[in-house]
Length: 534
Image (cartoon, rainbow, N blue to C red; front, side, top):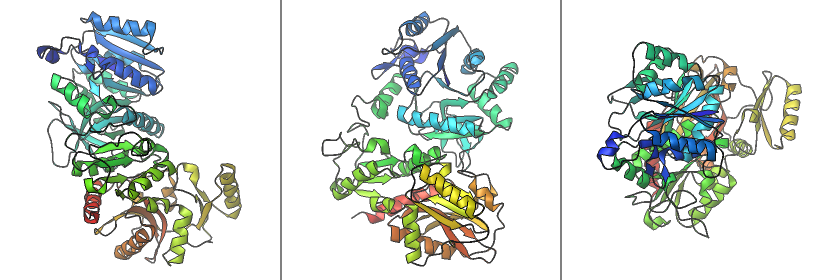
């Protein structure tokens, strides 16, 4: 995949404040801005990096030429650059368009500083979203510290509906200066330039106006380096700029009194939902304030017994008020969380609950407690599902039209090394997704068939919902009972409502993305945590 960098600015505001290097060569932490981006792009599989730099700043061109000849940090770099004196960032982008034909690419401005670990997930999500038909995946953030932010209106599925120069009620995100684009968007860029537009925000608005499928990906703190103070803030607050190795350094969250950690689910446990899962964590963090977010892969490096310093400013102990809000599912992360639980930390969801949420165990618990399950046999086909864990890929959930297909599907699971499966007869009716936070009164239902929300496309088998009447209170009571039995207070799942108004619960999960009700859910999750504190 190609990456592109707009580096044609002259850094005049920085120069007025005593920083005389051209902006691409300004150091943030121990690295020049341009070098940092090149390194990060190479770490994310860049086949080519193209840069536009200012024709009046030969020092930048010399630096880029040196990278072409010598590489960066001992690694060859497939770099090409053009020198242009352009009137705007959109015209700088226009100068690169001929190099960006034929395949999706990611574009950033040189002064954008972001968490490189989050960027890795963004790149993976961009590749997945464009493969499924998205025209663009725009980085957005709810950290607003720009002089002229561009506010982004998104729906519950993080699809962009509009861009605004001023804040409006309900708009949480602003553009982060990271653009994942497909070649088809370049024709929109050309039309914008032809009619005299000059700002990137005009291009983004034109993408929406043309009816393209523009999606948003939430990032945490993203910094634009326009002033000397921006450098200080980026170094102080950006985890990937800390000098310590192994993740977020101790004390890297100023003013953090309680030691609150948010653990993002690994991508393999978040198929087609990385951005949505991160968004609910960020909403919880926005309410709590002064939190750290790490991925579950990093969790094993933290905490006592020889690990790295914990990623907050106070020791890990219940006396310090430390809390962990975790979406983690891997055995390694759960082992570390269990250790922290034993040391007095509050972990939500508890590790015992997450371990209990394998499909086989959920079905066993439901059967033993007479909760409404699908029948084992039927005449409308069967579902065979991975039994040892939640679905991690499309192949983990399979619809079979008859018993012959069912046997073949079971064989495929065995060939993949999955020996524990759950079989349920297909039930005709409305597919209803439910979301809840036990003991808080929060419970919401929605019909994914009313829109285009889907993870693997299996929801379409039930067709458009008929909205058969049913008792949502009864479903809530059954779901809450199951959540208590599984020790999984933050939960979601799927039910099928039949024509008669009866229902069966066909799926149950620890901590879903809550994409249809994110803000309400986050408030309930924080309330649950506060109520559980000693």
